[in-house]
Every structure is written in structure tokens, then in C-alpha cells.
Image 1 (spheres, rainbow, N blue to C red):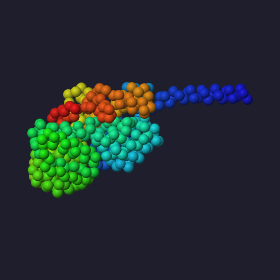
Image 2: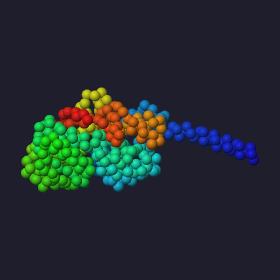
Image 3: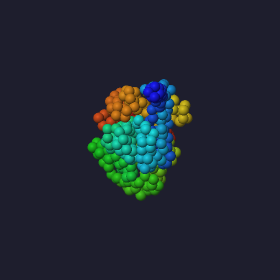
Image 4: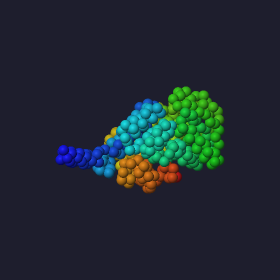
Length: 376
């Protein structure tokens, strides 16, 4: 009987030792939540493409810590409740070690508390509202924040375009839009500019003529519309129909080919702040653009570039942490200094926000044209 027990114990230990290498060689799961369908589908698709390409490159080079990365992507349709459910599924069922989520500030502010409570790192590629990283120490972003972006456009309008009065049209249902409007106003007035009209709308509205008529009567030199492309296109069309000829401007939410398709010539002479330009001569940018075009048949926008950088940032942190433990990934990510990404050289500040440059894009001859770079 003792001999049998001894043999049984040896067998169990042998099986356990055989299983260990299989577990060590398993995949490291990273979750991603993007609006791949719905009103901001181009944003979600770009982010998904950028993140997938980054992970594929990592895996082709052998992965990290001896394991391949498995990227699990969920579509939240730009619905907060869908995003929350996706986050819980990825964390609780799929056991991801980190999340790349979400695209917009409003939805990210729904997902971030779930990640923070679960002590899972969340790195948003594109949510720019300052409140996002204030949720907790497990929350990071790969993009600059709205106070910087709002100030960049205010400086450009006042100093470069030499325009002294502005109107603001804000999406009151969007944390992103409200934040940008606030920071643009603060900086523009501090420089000596004057805000002559402030109007608002709700995302998904189709008729903006009442607000635009009031703005027209105020005779601004410039109109700031910090919204997303789905709304901005119709706004520009209706503004030109009403005879408003001054330049409009906004933030990175304008960065979609759909805006140009919708607005057409109405977008000519407008400007927006963004995270990178595919026209940059930096070798890392040109390599990224070339590989992306080869893989997807289109030029990558800033959303794709930011998601690409976010995925590479996470892998770099896992490598430096030497572990898939989320607390160690968090500490390694927070210690990131001088990471060279497609969207710039990234160093995280004490609030887990990257210190990096912004670019101004002009819409000219139906295309996005690089205008200038603004350093922090």
C-alpha cells in the first residue's frame, strides 16, 4: 500500500512538472475595448488596426517573457454600458493582464473605475480629458491631455493666425468637448482674445442652424468646435450655407476621413490639433506609415498611431517588469522615460500623463496638411 502511495505521489509530481512548461509557454492576454461599430466606427477601427499591428510585430520577434501576446478586442459600439460589460468580461473571465481602452473620454471614464478596482492597468490610447487618469494609479494614457490641446489651438489662433475674437460651439454631452472648450477659452482670453459667443449642442443632433445663426451675428474671427467628426461635418456644411466664412477649428476628434467626405469644401481652411502627422520625416513615423499602408491599404490616422504606441508601451512595461503581475506592470509603466513612439517621445509625469508634442493640421485642397509642431 505504501509502495502504491509512493508511486502515485511520484506520478502526480511528474505530471505537475510537465504542465509547468506548458503554462509558462502560454499566451499573455491583453484586452482592448474600442467602438468598432456605431457613430465613431472609424476611430475604433483605426485603434484596433494599430494595436493589432503592434502586437503582431512583437510576436514576430518572439513575444515577451518567452510568451506570445494574445490581443482580445471587444466592440463597445460607443455605448458606456457595453464598454463596462466588456471590461468585466475581459478582466474576470479572460484574465487579461492589462487593458487598452477606450477611445473617448466619456466611455473611458466608465471603464477606468472598473480597472482601478480590479487593480488591472488600463492604458487609453486617445482619451484626453484630464479626469481620466485622476481615477487612480492603474490608469494611464498614451495621448496628451485636453488642457495642453486646448492651449495649443488657442496659441495658434491668436499668435499664428492673428485672430482676436472667437466663438465656441460645444457638445454638452461630451466630457471631451466640454474640457477642450474650457481650456481653449481660458488660454485664448489670457492671451488677450475675446470670446464673443458660446453655444452648445448634443451629440447626434442633425440641425445646428439656430446655434450657428447666433454665432454668425456675433461676427467672430474664428469658431472653435471641439467635437467628434460625426457632428463636425454637418456643422461645417450648415455654417457655410448660412454664410459663415471664417475658419473653424477643433481637436483630435476631427481626425477621420469621414469628416472630409461629409463636409467637402466646407472644411477648407479649417484647422485641428492632433497627435502626429503621417507627413513627418521621422524614420519611425515613415516606417509605421509604410507598414500600415501595406497591411491595411490606407494611411494611418492619429488614432491608429496612438493605439500602436499604447500596445508597444504595454509590452515594453511587461518586459521591464519581468512579470505579468499588474502591480509590477503599473510600476514599470509609471517609470517610462524617453520611450520613442510614432506619436513622439513619451515620458510619464506624476499623474501618468505623457509629456509630448502636438501638431496642427490644416485642411487644404481636400486633404490634411501638416502645418506646425507645438512642444509642451
